Amino acid sequence: MMKPRIAVSVGDLNGVGIEIALKAHKEVSKLCTPVYCINSYMLDQAAELLDMDIPDDLEIFEVEGSFNIREGRIDKDAGKYSYDSFISAIKLCEDKKAQAVVTMPIHKEAWMMAGLRYKGHTDLLRDHFKKDAIMMLGCEKMFVALYTEHIPLKDVASYIIKEKLLNFFVDLNKNIPDEEFAVLGLNPHAGDNGVLGNEERIIESAIKEANAAIGKEFFFGPIVPDIAFTPHMREKFKYFAAMYHDQGLAPLKALYFDESINISLNLPIIRTSVDHGTAFDIAYRGEAKTLSYINAIKSALKFIYSSPAA
Image 1 (cartoon, rainbow, N blue to C red):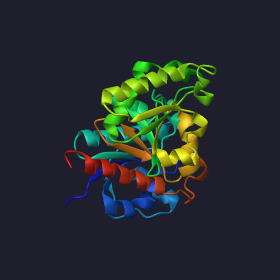
Image 2 (cartoon, rainbow, N blue to C red):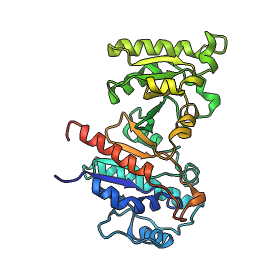
Image 3 (cartoon, rainbow, N blue to C red):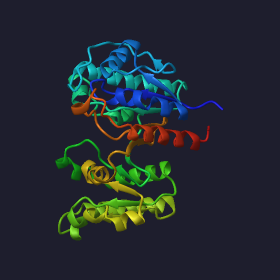
Image 4 (cartoon, rainbow, N blue to C red):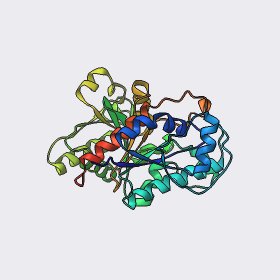
């Protein structure tokens, strides 16, 4: 049986992504056939800076463009190339030449410097496929789905809209069926019955309507945010839905930083990613860890093998 082909978007080449890909290639290639979206010139340059050999069996998909890698620097050329690598990986899936995309980290400021209007991978995927992509991060011990992602904290409350929350919960259930979610409130003490805010009433109403639409209780809450990730709650729930980025990701990364991954749900393609940034402070020093990337590959394979076409 042929191993699945996974398109690997190499991320910002001034960061740690390419080091991780090369380090993990031997292990990853036992699980699948990785296709790295990078051209020979850029790969050779990165390998030379890392003082690493390029494996003989490494397969690349040529992504046009060249620039001088500036390890640990924010750079518009690196930003544009990481975008082009990602678009190439998506195209490989759309053309049925790969069965999933796994992404290395990009740098959002580098994308902005390159004139790109997206704040990250998920925003691009949402626009490209015209679908409400859901960002979920975690590991086998705990997953957190984000209702809002890369928006200023001052704007989060205005996004608490029942219809949008209802669609978010229903889509979560379609993508992660049969799993129960603890839904966090927005305010301290989950609003204290309106004393500290009324958003929880909207969240509670959306939860009730979602469970009714599904026909079973899969969503519980709103849970008081400061107790949601206690050991007791994590014994009861593996999946959580957070109202905003740091509400869910600060506890996740405190608990499981090295092993967590990022998954894009509700899309026509499978996309997983490392759950860390470009780590410019250690770029090209040989210190980058591979666990998150390997877990992202394994997660993509689970989705591939569980899909109806598998």
